Amino acid sequence: MKTRKLVMIPGPTPVVRAIQDEMARETVAFGDPGFVKDYRELLVDMKELWGTTGEVFVIAGTGTLSMEMALSNSLKSGDSILIVSHGFFGNRFVELCEKRGLDADIIESEWGKAVPVEEIEEQLKKKKYDAVTVTHVDTSTGVSAPIKEIGEVLKKYEDTLFIVDGVCSTAGQKEYIDEMGIDVLITGSQKAFGVAPGLAILWAGEKALARRKALGTISEYYVDYERWIPIMNDPSKYFATPAVNMIWAMKESVNIIKEEGLENRFERHIKNGRAMQTALEGLGFTLLADEDVRAVTLSNVLYMDGIDDAEFRSVLAEEGVVVAGGLGDYAGKMFRLGHMGNIDVHDMVSTIAAIERTLHRVGAEVELGKGVGILMGELLK
Ligand SMILES: Cc1ncc(COP(=O)(O)O)c(C=O)c1O
Image (cartoon, rainbow, N blue to C red):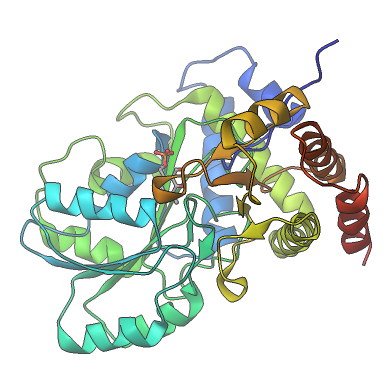
């Protein structure tokens, strides 16, 4: 008999039945009064939960579309931008900015480390920037940027927008928009929200909305805030067809978050993330990200000597857990394990147990039950 496969990659994450049920509902007209009400309530909740008096946009797309949306509505060709990169997804901003003809400077850390906040501040003193981008959690390295501290620094720079990529953090790690000085927060549906891929999500605070107004006409059509604002304020209006079932799925995700409490959800992610990381280290793995900047939404796990990545991941899949491979220089040397969204204690225990069985099957030295014991001990603290 085949073992069920738990999808423990860093997105898409497991989708719980209640959310799947929303995606399986009979699709209605986007003007259906029941749907309009649901969409409206979702948008109100999302603004309230993440704390902004600005706007939230929930539209069909992915995280990359949100990245483009953020840049298109914040900067015109020739404007200056500082990109703080902790890996592959930070570098994606470099490509996007080059394509847009922006004057982009990049401060990059060694993979696994974070750029010190002081270095960002030094750079801001040297040159005026129209925007700064920071990836909260870079999925390629598992590094979590100190968003609150960077936000504090940026509060001193009135003309600089703080754009945060929350694709691998939002709804799993702490982000409050206005309070933390974030001007634009972007994300997608498929990671810590525990919804299938398909939605681009973006919050824009008051300063970001004022910047959009100051830009006048922009060349983009689909991602223009100005075209979506009337719809986000009154979802009975039409601009481009909303992804009806995905909006329902997202609404269910937000209902689950409200029931759990956003703060409790952040705490759960810390507890689960740290427990999993302690268990992995107990089994002899090392983690790429330095401890003081380590994300809790995923783990970037370096193999011990003698383990073949392809074999390990394929045996692990047979044992019931799918993980992702390493990116860049870490391809073949690392696996990436997501532990965010609506995963529960069963998923966590099953995952570490499958990792132990896999180590045993690939001939690595392993004391069966050790990782499970550590994990459960940490979770019960
Ligand atoms: C941090 C981060 N930013 C951006 C993206 C791009 O998002 P998407 O693949 O949904 O376009 C990802 C995808 O994994 C990501 O992890």
